[in-house]
Amino acid sequence: MDQLGYGVIGLGRVSARHVTAVTAMNGTRLAAVADANEDKAREVAGQHPDNPAALGDWRELVTRDDVDVVVVCVPTQFHRDVAVAAAGAGKHVLCEKPMAPSPAHCREMIAARDSAGIKLMVGQSTRFQPAYAMARRLVERGDIGQPVAAQAQFVVGATQPDGVPQDFWRFKAGAMGHGYVLNFGCHYIDTARAIVGADPVSVTARVGNRFSEGIIPEDHFVILAQCAPDIDITVSVYGVPEAAPACSSGYSIFGTEGGIEARTPGAPPRLCRTGQEPVAVQIDEDLLQGDAWERYHRAFAASIRDDTPEPVTGEDGMLNVEWGLAGYLAGERRCWVDLPLCSEDCEFCGPCLDETIPTGDQ
Image 1 (cartoon, rainbow, N blue to C red):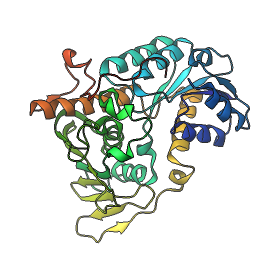
Image 2: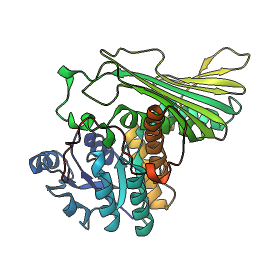
Image 3: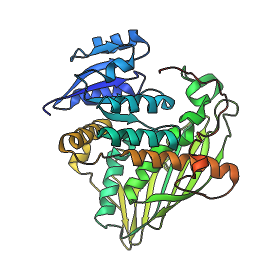
């Protein structure tokens, strides 16, 4: 396949990252863009050197002969419908995170992938940030012995009444994949899993709301996961009225022979080996080529051309969603919740402040 044609569906803020990545790669072309607001699609198309087709109906995009890869950037509750249709049309799919609002939706997407024989990748960009990807390499080469635990903690701005964005419905619908637990947490658990090479099997949590009552379902959470192999992963996100840079934000990895601190995505991680002074570790050059979105787009394109596994599989995306939903359930029930979720919880989409979420295509 000499050139891959890309179609981007949903032209909100994150779509620009994907358009830039496709433009930066060799052997790719932006063939089409689609948005329910066709004027927006024409505006984006008119600014791009590939002169892509501008469409108001995503269904037309997924059937185009010049589109090989569909990038799904619509709101989370529509991911399944677009991804399944694209797979049915024989297109490879790169779906923004979180993968879907429920494990049931994720499973339908995976089944469509398998039936069509296409590639399906979930856009978990955080694991491709240089410091975190380098931390993974340090673990892989045994610099801290056997990993035993990972902690991720971040401070973010709590949603306030005077700072509600125009797409406020995304937060108000929290359950549909846009609450803090799924929208932020799916990145952090995915990256922790990638660094230590362990997957959650049981989850407990505290999910709360200090500063955003009545606006969004939650503004902070702490989720502890027991993993296989025997590793603990803790992910904490704290919403505050005015977020400031915090020295404690980022990842700490603990091993039998030392630890790693990866605090800033682009800064060198610190290696702390037992009995030695901490040292900053230079990040490998290949992890600094382009931004995280470009790196994962390149890796996905390579998996298509070489018929190798996707860098972030549908199963990865589904496990990240299950982790977050298990956190909601564990917080409500004050217990541990096992993964995979039992059949009666597979339709669960989390708490919802307001059931009047948008319906339709995008």
